Picture: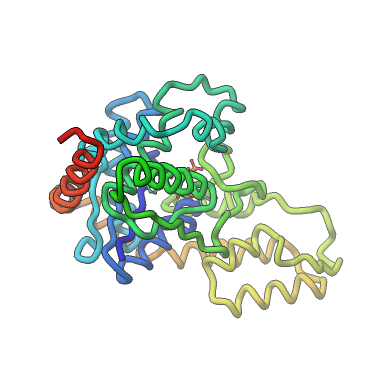
Length: 321
Ligand code: ADP
Ligand code: TRP
C-alpha cells in the first residue's frame, strides 16, 4: 500500500495541522510505503516572498521530523524537487472540466474572503491530483477540508483512464473522524488564516495565554453542562491527555461545579507535556540543518524514480510518446 500526503510550507504549524494531517501521516508510516512532501509549488498560489518560502519549507521539514516523521520509514521530500509533477499537471488539466474546479469549497472560500484569484489558485486541485497520481498512491491521509480535493483527483484519474486506458491508481482519502476538524480558540475550525490557531511550538507563555483565552460560554461553574463533549477545551484535551483525564473533566462538567479555569489549566499542562519530546528533537534538528537538507535530498531522489515511471506511463497512454 502506498500512502501519500503533503503539507504547504506556510510557516508555523498549529494543532489542527498536527492532529488533522501530520499525526495520522506519522502513524501510517509503518503501514506501507509512505511518501510525504512539502507542497512548495502549491504555496506559490498565495505566498509571494521567495525567502519566506525557502525558510518556511525548511521550518516545516524540521517540525515534521521533530514530530516523528522517520526518514528511514517514509520518503520525505520537497514537492519542487520532483518537477515531473508539473508536467503531469498539464496532462491532467486537459481532462479537467472547469466546473469541477469551480465547485471546490476551498477555492470558493478564498473568493468569498476577497482574495483576487490567480490561475494557479484555481488550478491548485489539478496539481494536487498530479501529486497523488504520480506516486500510484492508494491512501491519502488528510484533514476533512482536503477530502474534496482527493475526490477531484479520483474524478480526473477515472476520466484519464477512460479516455486513454488504465494508467492511474484510484486513491482513497483517509480521514480520522476524531480529528477531522480540530477547533480553534473561537470554536471554528482551527486555521492560520482565522487568527484562532494554537501553534505547535510556541513559547510556554504564549501557549498558556492562548489556552486561557479559549472562548467559552457564560454559564456559571455550578451549572451542570450536559453538552460537555462539545466544549472546545474538552475537544482539545481529548487529543493531548490520557482518556481517563478528559473523561474525568467531562463528568465534572456534566455534574456541575467545575470552573472553566481549572479545565483550561489542565489542558495547558497536558498540551505542554504532550509536545515535550517533539520540542527536544526540534531543538536538536535546528542545530543540525545539514541533516535536514540531506533527508530532503535523499527523499527527492527516491521519489523521482517512482514519478518518472508513472509520468512515462501517462505520456505513452495519451500519445506523447
Ligand atoms: P490552514 O487551514 O491553517 O491554512 P492548511 O489548509 O495548510 O491549514 O492545512 C494543512 C493540513 O492540515 C491539511 O491536511 C488540513 O486538512 C489539515 N488541517 C488544517 N487545519 C485543520 C483543522 N482545524 N482540523 C483538522 N485538520 C486540519
Ligand atoms: N492541498 C494540501 C493542503 O493545503 C496540501 C497538498 C498538496 C496535498 N498536495 C497534496 C495533500 C497531495 C495531500 C495530497 O493541505
